Amino acid sequence: MQTEFYSLQLSKFEALECLRALLLQALVEEEVRMQKGLELPEMNSMINRLMNMLNVSEELVERETDKSADELWEYSWYVFTSEWAWFRAQQEALRAIKKNKKLVNTEDVEYKHFAEKNFKKFFDKYVAELNMMPMQKGGVRKPAGKRKTDDIK
Image 1: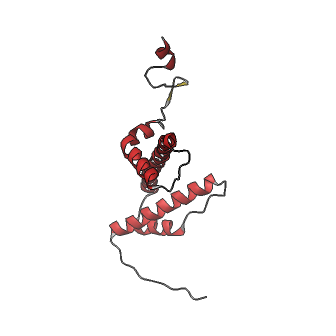
Image 2 (image 1 turned 120 degrees about the vertical axis):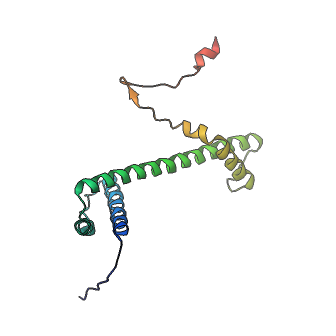
Image 3 (image 1 turned 180 degrees about the vertical axis):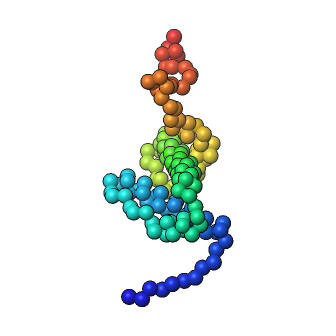
């Protein structure tokens, strides 16, 4: 078997960006395999080669990996909350249209328009439904506000 070789010139910054991209890819692959209950992958040999070539310490790589993990978490949270808000906007649109009609076609322009309007108008409200408050003193912190029993009195 004949192996092809390529020559590539990169600045140190560009090479560090390549290393960062490989670390990000490895992080995602590791997380996906872990979630699926599969064996964790071996370290990509290109990561080691770039680390040696750039004379980068393992501490720096670890810091960069942690930073990438935080950025991925932020992106994932944004995607999740956006999808949740869209789902809730569709639910509200369906509920509102069902009051006037027996059957609702989810492909209908009116339904889609109403869902988009709800998404934009109530985005913060829908995302607030996902409020993941940290547990404090062994219990979940409840949001302040009137309780249903207060309304009865």
